[in-house]
Image: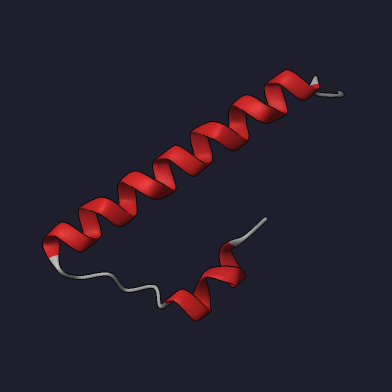
Length: 44
């Protein structure tokens, strides 16, 4: 099954939004486990 580009873009946007929210929450808590250098491992 092929996904339309719009759907892929939507998924990418949602993923980016969630990752951003996760970072904001983690920074507020003061416990951000992923170092900047480690982030590349989680890139798709």
